[in-house]
Amino acid sequence: MAETFGEERLAVFAINDDRDIKKTQKIMAKIKTSLPILHDKGSKIFDTYRAHVIPTLYLIDQQGTIYESWTGTIENLELELTQNIEFVLKADNALTPARLQAVTK
Image 1 (cartoon, rainbow, N blue to C red):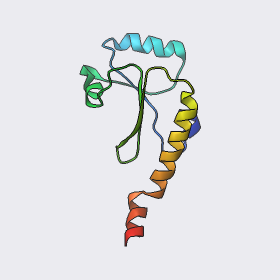
Image 2: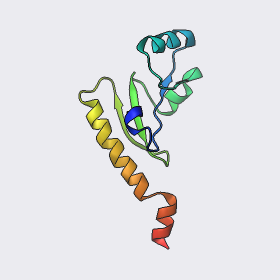
Image 3: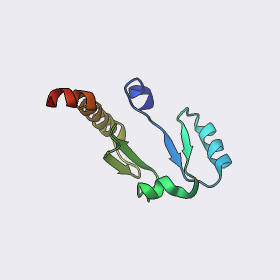
């Protein structure tokens, strides 16, 4: 997803709440990903977003609204994600604050 939509206002990253940062780094090196990994010290992000299942994936629009979420392993996740991301990007592009102001004036 990061490679597919990377040019289009899409940030893709992982958040890890593992207490052992070195263990996480070893795992990420093993799977050879360039995906940025944020460390959630004290599980603050997990608690804020009420993530209780790993993995949990969120699609959040430019205004910070959670558009969709997925938990666990999902069949056809790439297709579902692609469709949802394309929809959110089109909606965000159509309703950016500047465009919204121009339309409502």
